[in-house]
Length: 184
Length: 145
Image (tube, each protein chain N blue to C red):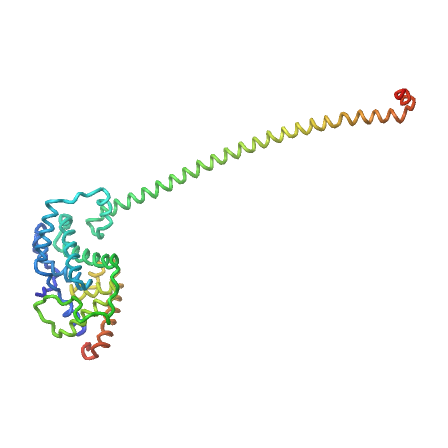
């Protein structure tokens, strides 16, 4: 089931309860990794590594909000690091299969499954930083300022990257699916 | 938010991880607790750089900055001392060379004076003899006899 996007989701989780933290945030961490890497086994491995790092560092984190921020930040940086280390090529839009390993179980059906799948493929074809920003903005519902804090860059840079990424996505959707679906 | 952004948000809903994900993480954590990895000094130091900058890590970064500053200051100081020592050694060598040149010069002066003295004596004697030959022919005759 798609979870509601939370800002205060961990507020009542005891910091020492690692199992509860994992259960609460597994979708956030796994989903971010999956959207970025478009590779379910790699995404699970990365998500597990993030939680193992959290397990080792849990006593240094001061509050549940700090845990959420830390998880997002470490997941984002690990995604970028993994891409650099493995040298995964940018996925070309034309090379993406209809189901690029992005279709995972959600109990909520999207309004337009075809458009939804196409958008997932298009997001996966974005440059790494832009892809991560789009994921954090639209999956996690974070503001540009929050994303800037996670990625250690100015908010203005995040805004301009997001605008460019949106324009690119819109343009590709128009080219592949037509104007009708992108009206505002 | 535009309609397009709504579509994007809809497409990027969070995905559930595969079944048993949390159990696998907890099993790994339990295994890590029962067999804590032996951390070497190298791991612990390099770990400082692997952490995102957060208030809790400021002390780490301050330590790194202090060590780096100490290394830079120490390096500059060592270089200055080294340069000063080299300069002093150069000055001493220059003084020794000048002294040696001065001694060599005075010796050359002495030698030249000696050579001049030696060269001047026979010339005087030859000049005296030739004067005697031209002024007194009988003396030459006597010498021949």
